[in-house]
Length: 142
Image (cartoon, rainbow, N blue to C red; front, side, top):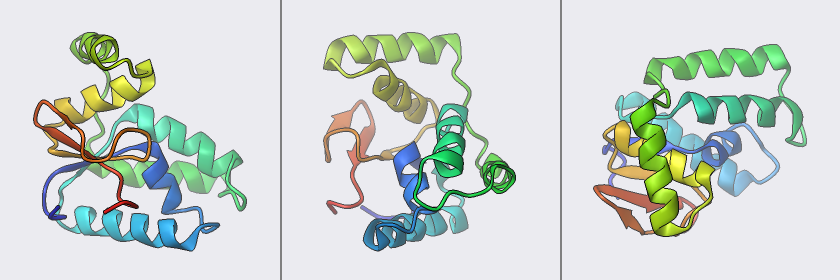
């Protein structure tokens, strides 16, 4: 898939860009983030940034300081992260029911769709699966 398309980044992909314990995933994630950032074709959500903050500040082998993690999140504000509205919440509930996903996975998909993305980078869902106009991509399987 072309890296010029609008892409939504799930938490795990953003975390890998800062977690150097797996250099392959870290390098791939960093490259994707950089390419989409430069093309202004990246999107995410406040839910993702909240999960990212906790993970990179407390759960990775070499965590960032809380202050540095907050600064990184602030930098992602330039992506205009989507906030879960009532409509996105209801859409997530429908997706959860239809595909039997966890609510949180369905919420990420609903947020990506609300962000007008045609790609969702994540490790958590089936690579290549299509939901409406969105293609789910595991960047480590491409």
